[in-house]
Length: 132
Image (cartoon, rainbow, N blue to C red; front, side):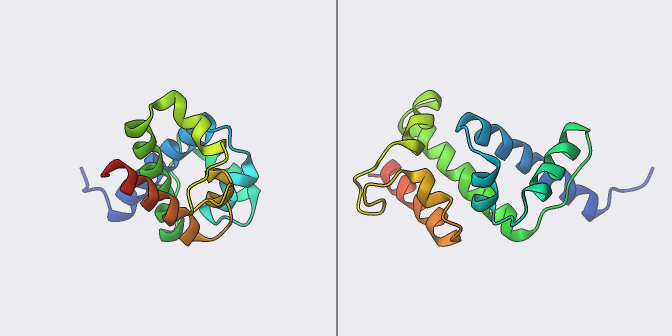
């Protein structure tokens, strides 16, 4: 029996990350366009292909940038569950926010701006709220 290659292990990791992201995206009622903007994927067909491959039981390989985007989403989701709870997290991402970072916009609009810094800023904001 051979040892799994690093590539095989990384595609398993990538697939698990994308699966978790898909669950969070569904919970937050994200459109395919929002998901693509958040992950920095320029073509919805690419995202659709990844999700179809996951449903078929195949593994996917993701870029470092996509994995970093998913990492931010996981951090945001975890912070929201700690601060609010699973159910209320859904409303928070869509509600107008008066915090200076958001300027009255909802978190989702900032998270899906297409700028990785905006996504990271939301994750940092929520981490700081957790440790206040």
